[in-house]
Image (cartoon, rainbow, N blue to C red):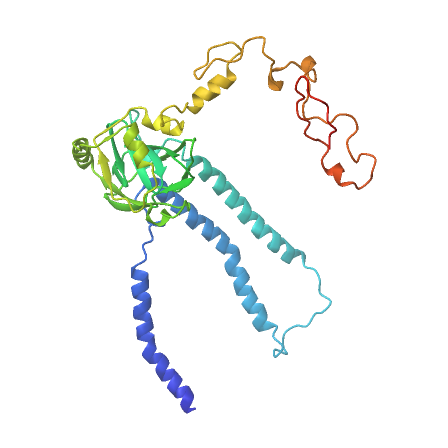
Length: 381
């Protein structure tokens, strides 16, 4: 009895301390995903809340009934009905199957609508609830390049660029064009919109808006190497006057982002401080995406044009083979299939074809080297 009294007393003493600790821990939590500053992210938060509510319609009753059944049909309850031969109830089956089916249908419809409405490639239909886009709205274009381990932001309309610093005007649609210099990364500003991947040699897009002035954290959400933990940046949402002032200040920077500067910048570095460039080459982002910033490296579009050019035509990289050169298999007509020698095809019956279970049956093609003129024929192993 004495020990029980001491335990209750100790619990009463610790309760205020636990409450203070819990309050201190929760005070540091920023519900940025559920209380964002941009309309796109807010619609995504509503999607999370609706999906959670629909799923709780099943989870909460199941948990409550589990506790109820465990209590009602416990071994000590002699008043509970005992029906060992019960095996079916049409009404119960209808409830068990109809309720989840309706929730799955609702989640499917919600997902289908939100997937099209919140498509990151789709231009925005509004800036905020009750704020439709004007007919002459021109989005601010920002070109994003994920480097090792930092973020490069190019403003082509303003002719400036920054590293690890993103400044956007409030209540204005922003069109992000994104790529990567080396490995896959994820561009994510939780207060503005969801995560979008950046990939080398490819371009992804995102349309978003920030409605509240402030400073918001951006990061990469895809592990990309040793400096990943420091691959963060601040996003500043300012009014139009503040954005114009910032653009003027950035244009006054002495540094210029040309090919040589970019090639130095893309070298791996960690915990990079914000940088500003007062000028930038107009087609730099295109060549980053095409992976041809380095001198002497052809752009991917030129290589593809060369590969698709007709024989004998002049392609951007070099001339194709002459017209009388052998055609590749993909360029042959149907009646020409099989007319050219197959250097790696097996000659005659394959090894092991007459021996059941032979190991040679696992590989029915063998490499037969080209026989040079005057060379002796050797046996094929």
